[in-house]
Every structure is written in structure tokens, then in C-alpha cells.
Image (cartoon, rainbow, N blue to C red; front, top):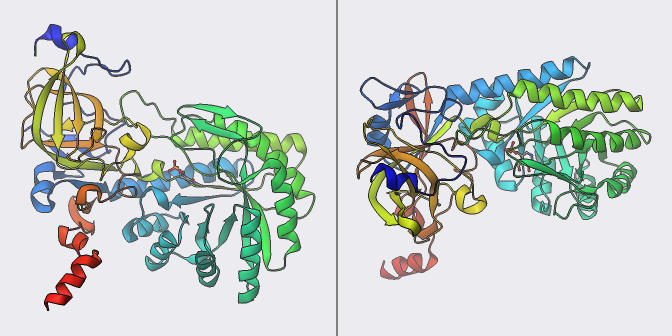
Amino acid sequence: MSASSHLRTPAPAWLDEPADVNGLVEKVWPVAAERGAGGEVSFGGVAAAELATRFGTPLWVLDEDEVRATARRTLDAFRAAAALQSAQARVYYAGKAFLSAEVVRWVTDEGLAVDVCTGGELALALAAGADPARLGFHGNNKSVAELERAVEAGVGSIVVDSAIEIERLAAIVQRHGATQAVLVRVNSGVHAETHDFLATAHEDQKFGFTLTDAVTAAARIRELSGLELVGIHSHIGSQIFGSAGFREAAARIVELHATLLEGGPLPVLNLGGGFGIAYTSADDPTPIEELATGIVEAVAQECAVRGIPVPNLAFEPGRAIVGRAGVTLYEVGTTKRVDLEGGATRLYVSVDGGMSDNARPSLYGAAFSARIVSRASTAEPVLARVVGKHCESGDIVVDAEYLPADVTPGDLLAVPATGAYCFSLASNYNYVPRPPVVALRGGEARVIVRGETVDDLLARDAGLTAAREGNA
Ligand SMILES: Cc1ncc(COP(=O)(O)O)c(C=O)c1O
């Protein structure tokens, strides 16, 4: 491609042509990702080619040291911010971001509690040895069986989401002769949309009670023996930069907290998760210490205005704990130049995974970035689109990125910031087996979730089972 034609290539406005097509943008890549003198990138001290040879591609790689350090730093940040207001803070790891037994152990070792939102996530957390008393269970349609299991297991708190669920849970608790701490999920009317906030009086979404209905819900919970109302729960959205949206929510929620306090104790205020990470060079997440201070100060100010003590605070980060610690490693299979309107071209780079291991671009139009990690290149940067192997034109892994013009089959390509909501949102679309997850610690790599095989997928098919039994 000539320099003039790639100048006309339609890159998104936020994407600058990099000065060095081999460079790793610091805030996007795992802390321990490094391009060595030979040009190859290593992750946590393990070379990309070694990972690909030992475990195959596609491969999800998660840096355990980084997950642990981030969990600890996040807990310290919220505890320190709360301590300044004479309050305590608890940090739940939002399991939906990435849940496996090892990850549960890492975050609980580092002092975090865990939140889950389905019976499956609950089963995994319990099987991994999480202390039930330090589990939170939320979700808008928990089944009777799921609630029953949570109560039996002694889950620390259940976030109720509807009037029906309050009655359902009360009946279960009564049957078990138990007492269950509950929080009321509140729809504050503030939600994050892309990087802005919408604040509406009547937000049109499925989660929680409106600020008005929450008062009735809380009163009903307090009437029911066996249910103990401990607080309000709110979550305004995900991938949020800055504390402005949380401040807006805090004003509304503390108002409700003060109202409910008139009817009895209310020791906890859970403000959810949603803290953003950098997926591309255009993203600029606020350091967690700054966010924690901003949010806790906002709550404290709202409490001071109303003359009430600052409650104990809880937060539920998922993405911010695991997102940056993960990369996905792919092998390039084919490349293709596609002519566009106006004489521009786009280089399509097909990799051996796609929307089955990273649904976020096709689900939310999420932006990611990429680099060739098996070698450095001296070729000029060209605008590329990294696509998967699925039978779907929307099967895009990285919509727009500059890659070296000489990218070729056999190159290893890594997509950073895939630690959150990639493994957990994965599918078997097109009968593609889900990749293994490899953890890195102290320069060693080990499998923490095994990859699927095509046989695993075929084994679920009752038609094949019947045929096999018939042949036996
Ligand atoms: C109730 C609740 N808590 C926590 C989270 C975690 O969000 P994030 O991973 O963006 O921190 C979510 C995600 O949507 C959520 O719905």
C-alpha cells in the first residue's frame, strides 16, 4: 500500500497511526507484557510463541500476579477512602466478569468478597471454597431453586429485585427457619451510556425498584420475619470513567437511604461496580484511588447534608479487577486487502478465533486493539480489521487497528484487555470449542480452565448418543 492510499483509509477519528507499530500502549497491555530485544512479546516472563506452542491458539492468558495486585490495590483504595469518613468498605469481585475456581481463590486470598448473579455462578464460587458469608447474590430473576440454594448455603446477602422476589424469598427463609440479610436493588435513574450519564426520573430497564417503590419494598421486607433489611444496592452501568455518574447516583441514593433509616437500621450502601479500563489508546481511565475518594466523598457530603452517619460502603468491580490482566493470543490464518470507496483499502486479518471467544465487539460495538507479538516488524503501519473465523460478517475482533503491512499467516496476534467479559461471554457458535485459560505466575504458565474439544461438543448431542447406543 502506498502512503497516499493509506492516508485515505477510513480510520476512526480516535485512532492515530502509531509512531511504532510494535509498541505496546502501556495502560492497555498487562503490566508484565514486554517486547524483548529479539522482537517477541512475553507475558509475565513467558514468550508468546512458547504459550502458543504449549497450549495452542486461540488462548486466553490471565496474569495472576496482576489480578492479585489489582484486587489488593482496589480494596486498599476503597478502605482508605472510607476510613477518612469513619466508615468501612467491602469490595466484592463481580464474578460475572470472569469466574473460575482459581480466580475466586486469588481474589478471596487478597481480601475481596465475591458477588454472583445465577445459580451456576453461586455453585462455582461455593465449589471453589468461597466463604458463603462473604458472597452476595443479585439478579432480576433468581429462581426458587437458586434462592433456596443460596439460603441453604448461608449466602451473606441477597439483593432483592422485585416485589415477587421478596415474597418468594420470605417463604423460602421461613421454610428453612433461617434469617437472611437482604439489600434492595434500586434503579436510581442514573445510568452510564457510553461515557456519559443519563439521569431520568423513570428509567426504562429491567433491574431494581424505582426510588419510590423501594420505600414500599423496604417496608415490606421489614414486616417479614426471617428477612433482615441491611441496605440499598445500586449499579449504574459499566466501563465508566470518572466519578461524576456515581456522584449523581449518590445524591439520589443517600436521599433514599436517609428516608429508610427513619424506619430502622440500614448499615450498608452498595454502589455496585462499573469502573472502566483502557481498551485502546483513546481510553483514559481514572486511577482507582481517585475514583474511590471521589465516590466516597460524594456519599459523605450527601450524608452530612442530611445529618446522618456515613454507612458502611460496598462496591462490586469486575472488569477493573481482571480486564487488563488478560490477553487473547491468536494465530493469523489469512490476510486480504479490500478496496473501499474512494480508492482506500482495508487489510482484513483473519485469526483462528473470533466472536465465540470475544463477543464484546459484536454485542456492544466494543473497541479493542492488537499487536503482532511473535516478532517485531519494520514494515509501514496499515489500517487493518482483525476478524474471526465465524460465518458472520459481524465477526469482528478488532474493528480498526494499525498493523504492520507485512502481517502474514503464522504470525501470532494478541488482543489486550480481554480479561473481563470474554471468557464469561464465550459461546460455541459454529461448533467452535472454547479455548483454554492459562494463568501466569512467577514466570510460569499453567492451565486453569481446560479448553473444549469438538468431542466435548458432540457429546451433548442426544441424536449422536442415541446413534452410538443403537450401534453398540
Ligand atoms: C450488579 C452489578 N454489579 C457489578 C457489576 C460489574 O460491573 P463491572 O465489571 O463493569 O465492574 C455488574 C455488571 O454489569 C452488575 O450488574
